[in-house]
Image (cartoon, rainbow, N blue to C red; front, side, top):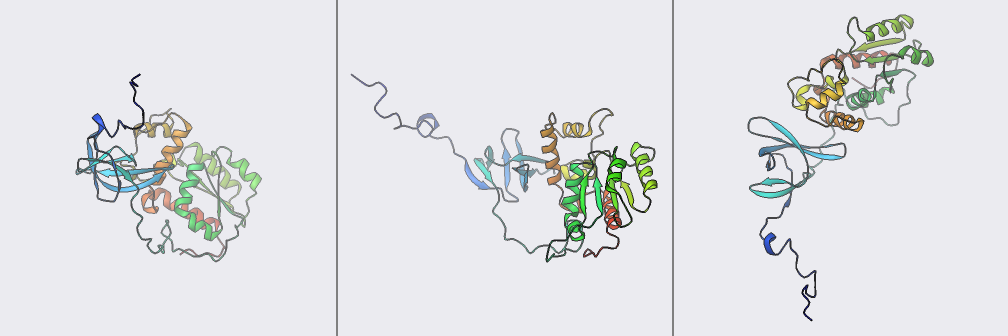
Length: 292
């Protein structure tokens, strides 16, 4: 009997033989700065500016000749010189000597041993505020021994302070969003500072959310979008940026992508910088500081 299927079903690979034999295969290529890459699905062509890791995913940012920028997940689906490639992380450069300045612009101090936390605290409204402060001022705060905690909103600030028990030697600095005259936040700030005049300092920035304290140019915008009243500012911002915004996970990943663009104090608005420095000074009065 003739075996119509042959004797060895693995003898031929349809991806290497027949109609697929002449299809070009993707070659792995490091996404080095300056490499000109095409995204064939959109036709966008640009040079590699940087590769960043955000939310566990490597993103490659391209800039075309008109200065427009787009980011893509690293991997396959790109073309270089008319050939398909799989972009990989760039070859690690030789590690340069560590900068003598922290991300906040302060002189870096090498700690010989961990600094014991001082009694004073800095409170911020939420996790995003805390993460931004940590990224830019974290080194300074560890030298000073100041711990940053978040409030999950400023509405119950008086209750938190009542439990904490501020004193002139146990000070509390509070960073508040949207601290503008006549706002609910300004009334709360005035009340608690009147109650603990020498022990509590509440300062704030004019932005509705800490996201807007990041310079919009860092995410490719001329200005942050104007979100209509009644729309959650995080949801509205991500929608305007064309990013997923339906779930809490979407919000978290969107913030991680924004935070990844912050490299130092130079990427933040002055309206935030001065306020955080003011809180650090207030909470470290009388402590030995290595920051200059």
